[in-house]
Length: 519
Image (cartoon, rainbow, N blue to C red; front, top):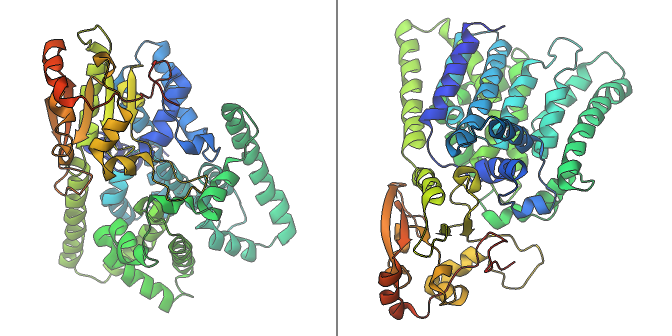
């Protein structure tokens, strides 16, 4: 089992831990590491989803156990707290890669396509529930009984469902196919296999969630209630129905979308010959269709269908290679490798890296800084909410504050979250939320994007720029090209400058022990 192919995938995924140093989505930290940090060390921010009971603790609890172990041996540094969870996920992804290789009959094209996939290299070591979901999907697909009656594949499917309920969508066509072709009576298969495995897995997951939530909770139901029935996801952005077809799937597949389309056409045209590919293609289309009906769309939602697309493509290329010339085979392989390599390199090393690069600096600052009043650091993030990791990357129980962006759960008229209120009038928000005195109550450090400097120049007049980190080549109205950290002047400099900012104010920080905390 532990052959060279497996260790090759381990090497690729571990390499991605160190080569992918950019920001992707907030959930990578706020729905996993931040929660784990709170479980292990007693402080950390929980987003509104956790208060609503719609997130499962199963994934972050794994990292919390790792954190506890590090603390036990005195190795709970900020560096290891951020590095080891990614290595753990990378190892799981590597095992899933190996199972994918086995499922693809150990073809060379399957290994090549998976290892060169820019998207999987980009997310395969990230601590995202979607990454875990995709890994479990690959493992389950490798056990799917195309020509047998066994049902071990249901265990990872069930686990994936309770971690992220939407992961069941690609399995609807596959499970219907499995039930239809089985020689066992349908009732027996549903009761003795599907229901039994679902109940056992569900009991474990509901037990874990209820323990950590402090009450009996069915997080899967709450997840579906808020995201599907209430449509809360649309608060975080909407896309047209065709977005997954025009942008989502082509981006996730990269240059491999070209052979995938050719493989899809062949699979439909000769569906009786390529029955396995046809069923998988149906699953991909069904998933894209269902997700297209939802207003809120993201690239990462398509990750579970990536292995299906790559299987279809690998099988097509393997058959094509038997007739193609060696020059065409090498040209195709080099084209896929070069284009995916460029995409992985740019997204992994360059695009959106500033919000991660700033965190080691803030961790050091939080550990060592004392102001002129001998107070510890107080850090204010004036940027779109969840733009950076939080306590999981600082690992110091200092006061930190960011702009909140909870959805309109109470159906208020003309609702604006705190981040929108701030960006509508930055200095107005500062004057309203930050009292003038005492000076020691002001945040010692302000973290913001460079695009806000002109609008915050009065407030920042009592601060000095300490460090700047490149973030992106494509700044927007709210997200700048550089992340900047400002530090408050000492007593004399600050008092001299404060007269020009008498209308500024002090933030209510995130630490409840802070006397200025404002629930």
